[in-house]
Image 1: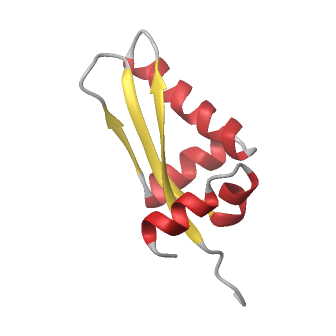
Image 2: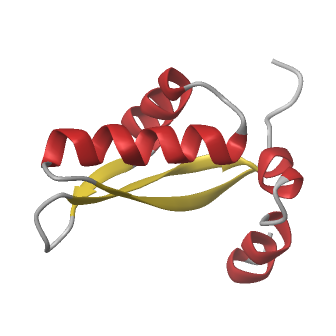
Length: 86
């Protein structure tokens, strides 16, 4: 491997009538935001993140490391750099 892609943490909220649907909603929202597949988001959350259950029923938080290039593309890269001193 010649280069490691710069990453930054991001969290996306998922909501639905039940926990399983909220997870799918959160994964889909993250995938849409970053223009990637749900499978990629699921993998990133599994390998270097988490899916956390919220206090209210049917609310979850998907947290994972996202490529800075993808965050830049949606206008979030500067926030991540500022927050995490990247």
